[in-house]
Image 1 (spheres, rainbow, N blue to C red):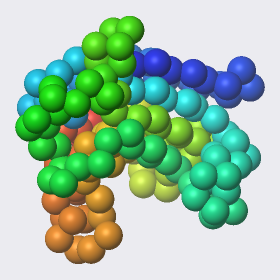
Image 2 (cartoon, rainbow, N blue to C red):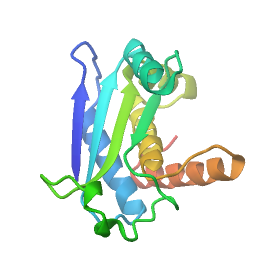
Image 3 (cartoon, rainbow, N blue to C red):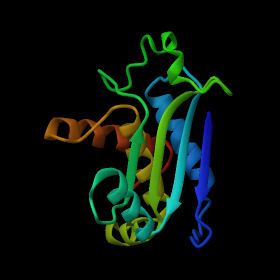
Length: 164
């Protein structure tokens, strides 16, 4: 597993964010039975930074907690069948399946942890799990999709000890 984490210099997180991110990425891939080594990039920024990304890439001029930019379009979420037949999905330098990018707002980690009454560790873990599921093709456009994602997030986070 290759997880590239970049935290902007001005961001201060008083938690072991690298370990949390790597552990949750790994837990999601294990939960979804991913048969490949994978690659994910994570950027931690502030509300201004995520607002810029959101505006630039999605045309939405407001901040948000997390953005997911999947590299792969799935017919069925987390269906890895026949991926090995498409070498363009794999980084030629490390042979890892390139899942995509995650961008997280550090300010939202703090405010949402306070709002929901749990730790910053749990909030970061939730945002990573949520975003990883998006990178694996899950969405929450309707109630059925939302319920599926919520159950997967809960199972993954509980399995890692991030209980609400």
